[in-house]
Image (tube, rainbow, N blue to C red):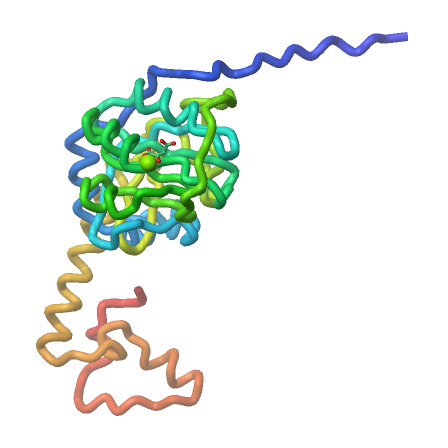
Length: 247
Ligand SMILES: O=C([O-])CC(=O)C(=O)O
Ligand SMILES: [Mg+2]
């Protein structure tokens, strides 16, 4: 009788402090594009769930993801992550999308701000939102809850996470603004910068042409598509082949 070999499973360390980060200048450059533009430019990938929202619509951020798996109604690992994070990092804190706890507030917010942490993103709850807005730290969360937390449960820092319906690796670049959050693979940042800048240039050109009186149907070459659907457009002398192509 053969005996199956034993399978050794090595648990990941709870705290990994050394991660690769993208080049700071590249991160800053990508941050000039909006979350929606970056998402489109990289092939409609990387958009986190729209359930994770900014507490301040004026806020935006970009930085390197430090991933945190915390316990439900527990912010022990979040505090460890603040301790080890570097300036420009974004704390991405999974609580299993538990809405009924304020895992983060203005006290921890001040600790983040003092360390130069770029933003806090959680699928769980936060509290002290008025003070956090005044502090000017971008905070994006799944909920707002006044309910308190404990500091007991071991979790993980800097392991890959499924978060907001996407996979986030430590060191991935994460951008958030009023419209949502997008994650960019660290290895792909240069390519995504080029694609995002090209898209921004296209959009600026379109806006300029609209201001000059050109129409969306004309410039997006929608004539044929509309004709197939039985809608005829009055071209009014405009050559449909001068459109900029499908967007
Ligand atoms: O201390 C906590 O557990 C969360 C909080 O309210 C704060 O950071 O101000
Ligand atoms: Mg508080």
